[in-house]
Each structure stands twice: as structure tokens, then as C-alpha cells.
Length: 314
Image (cartoon, rainbow, N blue to C red):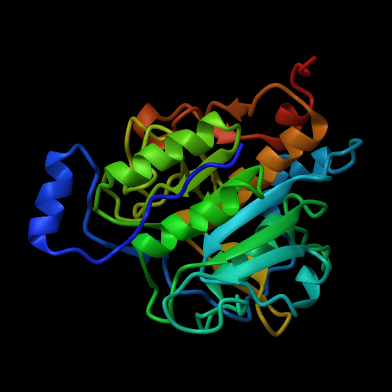
């Protein structure tokens, strides 16, 4: 089944009113922003890559089909540098949905390469003691964030249309205070189609941002290596669950380990574990209760090994 992407056009206020009176959904093209946390710390002397062990992904990797084999993940972000050593052979396809630039150029628009780091965390190939959560999954790249860390709602809608017929999982590391009934309708259609949607909960210490607060999207929050919730992490009873997202070691564009923070990086671990679940054919994502309030941990800390061995779907 192919879903129809909402149509876009420039309208006068009279045209907007006329269409709304006829029952059409008409909304202003709003702006999303990258949900980045504290600035990346480059050249970190981290030698132990702890996030995989925290969620037991290193143990899940040893199981048959425990590395996301055959699963397609669409990253809606700032683009990806596919020439990185850890991403060679990982990128299935990609497209630039910004209003400027070559549509076929989905290279990272940000100097610190946010989208590329997200891609490394999801499916990066082993590098020393580093590995992506699902290194056997393939990535589809949708570039919607520009060099200023911003992207339009219309670009995101186009990216969703591109991803929904190509991917099993959609990852979104952006957000805003806006609300969109058009996008909510599209999210529901995508979810009903069997595609998993994950979004960053936010880094404001307040409630969830959109699209993480949409009922069809799973909001992913942040914990550190001690399973504590950082002060900047968003808190909300609608939080889906938490994943590592604070001081995460990841190779930078020069092959050095950098240290990054924010819920958009926590989403990487969520999508990776979902890829493992799908490749293993198990029933559901599984979590460990951290003993925290619902608004801080959601269902708990995602666990790749528990997910990989949960009751299988017949």
C-alpha cells in the first residue's frame, strides 16, 4: 500500500479560509529544530564504550540475527557523511529535502555532523571497542536539517513520505513547540502500516516536544552511564522509555572518539534495539525498571538482550 503525502502549495488567507470551510486541513509551514544537547566534546579519551553494555546490546549481538540483519532504518536528520569508515556499505539510499541544494546530495549539513554521529550509533561498523547497536541494519537518509540546525515542516512531511514506503523504522531527532494535525494524521497512517516511529523527547527539562508527544510516535528519553536522568532531559508521563543519551562516545569525522549528549542520540539506541527485535522476530521491546517515576523513565531502560529473547511471534 502506498500512502499519499499531504499536498503543499502557497495560498492566500481567503483561499485558506475557503478550504478550511470545506473541511480540509490547512496549516502554516512551521519550523522544527534539531534537539541537540550539550556541545560535543571532541577527542575524548574514552576507551570503554559503555552504552552497549548498559542495554546489553553486546550480548544480543552474539545471538543469531542479533545485529539487525535485513532491517531498514530511515534517519530524518541533518544528512550523513557516507564516506566515514564506519558507515561504508551501511547507507542504502538517501535524499536531500531542503529547499536548496542538489536533491541527491544528502551529505551532513552541520559542521559537527550530527546526523552522521546518529548513523554511527545506530549502525556504525565495529571500530576498536565501538560498534553501532544494529551494525547489520541498513540506513536510509532523509536530510531535513540545515546548517543552522533548523528544518521546515514541509520538508519533514516530504521526508516522511519518502521513508514510509522504504523503511521499517523511522528515527527523528528534531522537535518544536508546534502542533500539526496534518503530521499527526500522517504519523497514524505510517504506524498503522507497521512502521515504528521514534522521536527525541527533548532537552529542556520540561514536557515532551512535538513530534515526541504525538500518540503515534514513541518518545525516547535520556539516561547517563549510571542510569540517572540528566537535569536537561524532558520529563513527561507520556514518555515511552529511556536509553543512553548522555556523554555517549562515538567516532567523529576524523575517526577520533567524541562525546555527545541529548535525547536525539538516545533515539539511536531505541531504533537499534527495535532493529534487533525485528531481525530476531520477537514480540516486543523489553525494559528494565529503574525505580524512577513514570515521567522520568517511561516504561524503563530499554534492554536489547531481553528484547532479543522475548516470546517470539508465530
